[in-house]
Image (cartoon, rainbow, N blue to C red; front, side):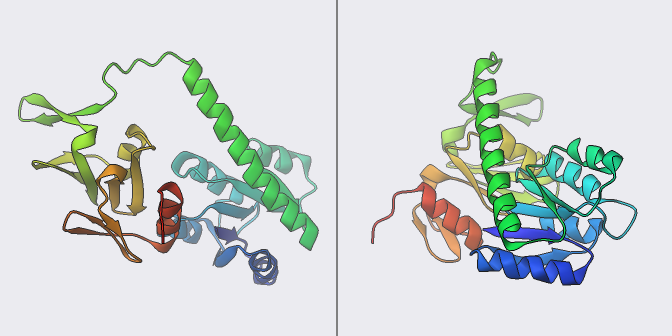
Length: 244
């Protein structure tokens, strides 16, 4: 599990890395400000973020927490030495999954990480339950409609083999042809059923039912090689039945 540390005090950051790696996590990435943290978040898959409230620059760890909530579905916890109630209340408005007070001790770090992961899972389950209780206004759930010239063409989700991102455009590769639309991969992923579609790389979503084989660096769909990151490969293998 990859953990991002956002902390501008490198001594504290190194101490956190030592503790987290000792627990069996991969805490090899450290950012010292908002911009470098955003760059890391957009270049690699993380499963948890540890955010210092006060970091270099005018944008704080609280600003970064809101960015994570809006753009990534991962838990985060705040790291702070603040005793200012106003600052703590501002941090709580971002709804962190846990809070870790400096100086960091081994047991408190371990507890905060476990608590953040547990709270995140519980919140996700509660959200799924609430969604099921709401009336679903989508009439056709097994298809997308893609605009071609002056018409919308129906594409069955089952016919989509994979989706490739090219900046703000997507290529939808189906069994019969390729469609190009103006959309982001992130937004498209939110429209697809997670039981059937999986993001294997920052530029690719695949239909799980279309996979023909998997190796260490690629997913094969027929004769097409699609790159897969190591973390995504491990998660993908946990979702399919494998035998050796």
